[in-house]
Structures are given as structure tokens and as C-alpha cells.
Amino acid sequence: MVKSRTTPDIWMIVATLGILAIGVVMVYSASAVAAFHDYGDKFYYVKRQLIFAGIGVASMFAMMNIDYSRWRKWALPGLLVCFALLIVVLIPGVGVVRGGARSWLGIGSLGIQPSEFMKLAMILFLARLLSERQHELNSFTRGLLPPLAILGTAFGLIMLQPDLGTGAVMIGASLLVIYVAGARATHLAGLGLIGVAGFVGLIAAAPYRLARITAFLDPWQDPQGAGYQSIQSLYAIGPGGLVGLGLGMSRQKYNYLPEPQTDFIFSILAEELGFIGGSLLIVLFLVLIWRGMRTAITLSDPFGSFLAAGIVGIIGTQVLMNIGVVIGLLPVTGITLPLVSYGGSSLTLLLTALGILLNLSRYSR
Image 1 (cartoon, one colour):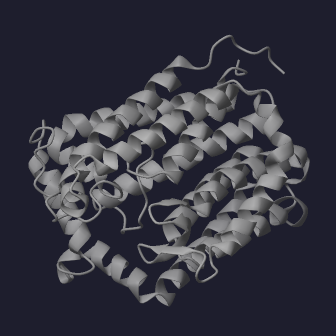
Image 2 (tube, rainbow, N blue to C red; image 1 turned 45 degrees about the vertical axis):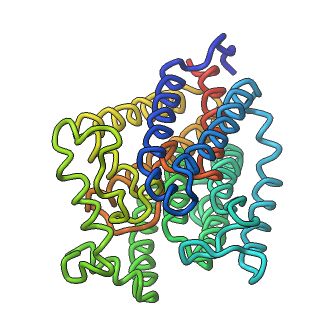
């Protein structure tokens, strides 16, 4: 293994903290109206976001100083715990339903989302498994089928909630790890075709998903129903223009755009800060992804390399899906914007994962 660097990747730290700072400001701006209306306190959401951010940053710096190789032995136990949580959350009366999905464990506003933890646990497990069995990846049955079976089981449990967005992010990041590990392109192409067929089947099996696809193709067919979110999102982005209406001056957050502080926070950002503000945020994400992939490419240890690629895959897939939704390129999936959207489990877990990635950067060439 290459000797550890004295400091982690400074570009990655700057990009992460920059995105997080923008996120805290935008959570306040996007949520102040709804928070005052619902709780009589316009700081309700941002105070909680600051708590989650503080815990997450502390975790990030702690993980940054823990040798990543220690996580290898926890890969299997962590995966088993996450599988158990995914089963427990499906039990009526135990799992909490939010947004139409039984995906939370906890009481009231305090809770965790097991599917968020499964994303990182799956990447960690695949990194260990594939680093140990990399020589077998040319064989579909011995090398590729076992990790795919585990991945498919986790995806199935997440879909029982149902939570297609989180499941899709996990699948996307996991397939990136499998590809980086050296899986054959023909095998992955065949899996892609099967995946497309399965995705079509999932859409056809649930009327609300089919309505989302129809609304994606033409939101004006149902402007007060399935197409409402897409239309209101574009109504927010359009007036933003080049420089935006000004911080705090959004009109769509006045109960026009649903979930302005979570799924559609980028719409509010584009409305208030314009094309320049949106582009700045995207550039910061690109810097984070670039430095993360550079770490993955330059690591000599296969386990570390696959783990770095998977963490970057989680962030990159989630960014593409969220921004794709809010600008109308993808159907609504209920995916938050990493480090920016309001949320506890997602924010603290992503910052923890980035801490591991920063530790990995210490060992890159």
C-alpha cells in the first residue's frame, strides 16, 4: 500500500463544505414560509438541518482519520444489520409511513431511513467481495451472479416500502463498482436490458408510477394532479433567469411547489440565485466527483478503489436524478439533492461516507 498522505484531499473538503453551506442557506430560504405556517417558527427546519450538519461534519472528520481498511471486517455485519432493518421497517405499526412509503423507523420527527444506510452498506460489502473475488468476474455464475443476487434482494426489500428512487441510486452506484471491478461488458449489457424490462414492469404494476411517466412526457395532461410538481418546478426555474430573483425572494415556496426544502430545493435555488447560482452548485458537485474518481483511480488497493468509486457513484447518481427531475428531464422519483436538501439520515450518512472517501484520498498516488 502507498504511504499515507499527511493531509486528505483539500479540494474535496472545500467542495463538500461549500455545498453544505449552500444547502443550509437554501433550506432556510425554501422552508421559512412553510415552517412559520405549520409550526409558528420560520427557523424550524434550518435549526434541525444545522444539528444534522453538525453531527455529519463531526462524523466526516472522524472517519477521515480512521484507516479505511478497518471497514473491511465490518462489511458483512453491516450488510446483515441493514437487511434486518429493511425487514423490520416493513412491519405495520413499527415502520413509519411518510410520503406514501413505509421507509422510516422512529417516533415523530425523529427517525432513520434504513434504505439510506443500505446504500453505503451495499457499496462497502461489494468492495470487499469483489476485491477478494476479482479474478472470478469473467464468469457470470461464479463471479457476477452472487453479488447481483444480494443486490437484487436488497432492491426488492426497498421496493416493498416502496421507494424506487433510493433503490435506483443503490443499483446505479453498485453497478459502477461492479464495472470498475472488471465485469465483462457483455454481461453488463445483458443486465441492462433485463433492468429496463424490469423497470417497465415496475411502472406498469403501480398506477401512480405510470401516472408519473405520463406526466413526465406531458405534464399539462394533468396540471393539477400528476403533472403539478413538474410544472411548478419549471415555473420556479424559468423566472430565475441569469442572476435570479434574489435570495429569499422565491414565489413558488408560498405553497405552490411541494417539498421545496427537500426534493425540489434546486428549483428554489435556481429561482432565487438564477443560472449563475445553479451553475456554481453544479461545479462544486463536479469538483467533488472529479476528486473522488481521481482517488478511486490512483489507489493501488482494490478494496479502497472500489469503495471510493461506490461512494462517488452514490453522490453522482443522486445528483443526476434530482436535477434531472427538477428540470424536467426525468420523471418524479422523490430523490433529494445530496448535502443540500433537508434531511437527517441522508445528510449525516453522506457526510460520513465522504469522511471515508477523504481517508481514502490519503492513500492515493
